[in-house]
Length: 547
Picture 1 (cartoon, one colour):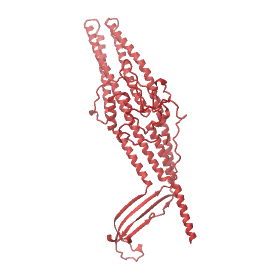
Picture 2 (cartoon, rainbow, N blue to C red):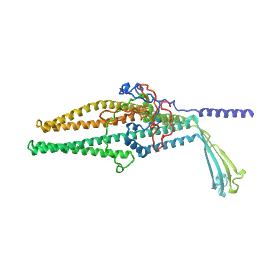
Picture 3 (cartoon, rainbow, N blue to C red):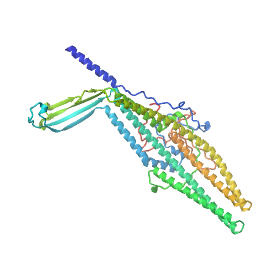
């Protein structure tokens, strides 16, 4: 008898030991961040060709996507832009929606994590019951009186984390929450960049409008001159008609620019969370912005881009769900129990003799294992693996797109600088040609058609110069966005002899040439948003690479 009891005890102990061992196991594959397609992460950007003396001083590559990007737009030194950015961060509805999605993901994470702990419930109340005679093996027609039972009970339930079924689900929910946080930062960065782009576009249109206003004034003066010469009999009516046509064309083009400006102003109002009727932007022609932006290390780009971080977290969640799908093939263990008091009358309910308890599920055993399901579990595992492969492809594609965006904007800024210098020469030459043509026309040595052609060229070259200045400003913003946001001290551009102060900008977290670390500016620790006053998403996490 004692030998049988010992064997039974050893069997139970062995089963419990086995369950404790597998309780700490996870069926999820070992997670590793996939490599960049092709030959891997490049050592330098193709279009980053700044000389060493223009590289500036930059912070070494240590911030991750979870760290605050800072108020990078302040490098432009524009108080109006600063206020617009603050207004957008506090009132933009898309950003608020992204913040709500973060809270939703965090709620799902807390819900999943609750499965790691037991559940405890309590109940109190009466139940009235009438038992059938047949269930008690009594003759047909026997009358059994109904009776009332009062119950006051508490129940507890707990699912043992066998084969990582629960912990992998928690890990997937945590990765989903981190993905939502990264997407929030992506929306926030996109909003900041969109506000800056719309602002510079609006000011570019203001500069074009000022140019057309000046052109209309000059052509009105030219028309008066032509009409006077026609009255004096020096020229024919053809020149008068041409002068009127040029004036009307300039007025029409000015109205076209005004139409574009109105639409741009309306777009900026929506970004600020306002109706167009609430927002009015005073005309402020754009001034040229000289910038020098070293791109840093491509490896730092993978750490700082919030969209890349979101894609990486999606992979991590899919990897954990493979473990959940695998664990479904193995046994599950649920522990349940209840206890309390049960009596026929309320007065006897809490007597010691009224106590009752139940251990284990009402139906079936404590340990369950699937035997046949028609291939449902296999299909679920195949779906989980396919989802992971899809997320891997999306991650690699996002990395490639990020490199492309950086290279595109680096080449844009490099070529725009050369194009701007050439355009400045064109403006000077065309202005001189127009001046000479007007002088020669007044002297009667050339036809008015030559004057018209020269003035058209001046207008075209000046408008192109204004548009190039706007393109430079927008490309600067786009490069900051492509690099994941600004960070650290930013060098200022030098003041040219014929332009006002134009602060330079940079946003890279890394110095490809190994410059010493710098201390971030006072305005760089963080930015406000719907989720918090400093860091809207809570404390910083480790970098993606460290995961």
